[in-house]
Amino acid sequence: MDKSQKIYNKALKKYNDGYIDKAIELCEESISLNIKNRASINLKGLLFYLKGDLDKAQKLWKMNHQVNGDGVSEKYLDSLKEDDVRFSLYVKALRLIRELKINEALELLEQCAESDFNYIKVNNYSALCYIKKGEYKKALEKLNNVLRVDINNDEAKKTMKLLEDLNVVKKKFPLKKIACISASIICLVILIVLIFNGVKNKNLLNKKFAKVKTSTIKNNGQKPSGVSNKTKPKAETIKEVFPQEKFKGYIQNKDYDSIYIEVKKWKDKQLSTDEGALLSEGTNLLKQDGSAYFYKLGTNYLNSKDYNNAKAYLTKAYEFGSENYLYADIVYMLATTLDSSGDTKNAINYYIQYDKSFSDGDYEETVLYRLAVIYKDTDKSQAKKYAQGLVDKYPNSIYNNSIISNLIND
Image 1 (cartoon, rainbow, N blue to C red):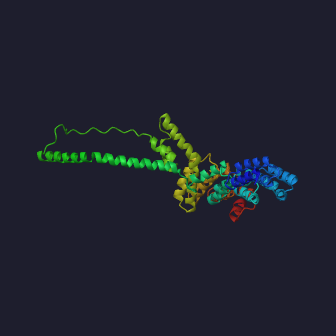
Image 2: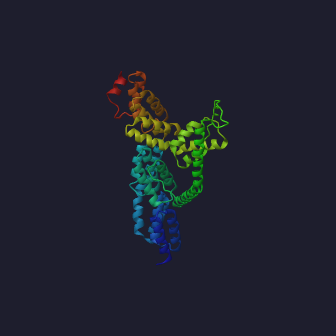
Image 3: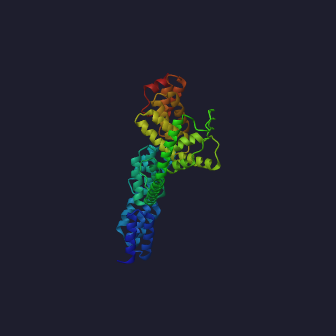
């Protein structure tokens, strides 16, 4: 076996192990040694194809077909005819994601997934869409597709971390760190035992002495000298101190519930520079990851019809989620929770916010309908406005029923 073929075999192994960039490097090395190594050229083209670089893939396969008369390359080239269309669908899907039209975007991405072209990006964006819909198992499946091909893919790793923070995926713990902690605990236990044994006898003597002293006082029937009958002075008011070390632990362990409690408690109080910086770090963590964590719990409670807990967690998500990509979903789910629990007065506020801020979102159709129905008995003009908006924007909506017709024609 020549050197070019050996390097090709290494490239193939790297690809199968998920190291796509290293596999491309090895393919280049193999081709530089033997321009007629058809397998290396085809593999390199395939790797670019998976990464979404259609132009490079096409050039490699075209060269292989023309120079080496390779039949496999010819088949690859024939299959590219529909990939231009798929790329257009992919670009359109990205635009729909930006417009928060997640269901429509997913439909296009599923069409893109019928081919392996642009495999990595299609699966990455599909995963994000499924997370927005709360379908975490499907999101995980898409991420695993990416990581099987590109184990170091930054986007997939970032999204996987989000799933870990949502407790969908169990976090991996570093074994070395655990071993060090275990060893430290063992040493600490030994030290405590030694100290305990050292003071054991002393404690026994102190107890005996205390008994003798107590007995003497009882027999005399007198108070020990120096004890006054005057009322004891009131204890000084203890100033509450920011729990700096505990808060660091909450941040390290991503204990979002505890972080939330402390942030709410201390956000308006005077703190030192270090304490303020630490509180700010906790606040940012709630904005970045905590809001998604609260959103997941809130929607789970909503699905279980536990409206009190759903409201509590979705309110937390709402407070800190304004910069999160899930914010539109948070607003809608909070409105739905309040609506379902009978609190339509407050639900209206969040439905209106959704209509004003996310009118192109996935839930706009439902929002317009609920606003029309809720206002039906309290404000006819508002009800008619939202009913008309529903018909104009969604003429084929399933919500265009007799209630909506009556509101418009009234």
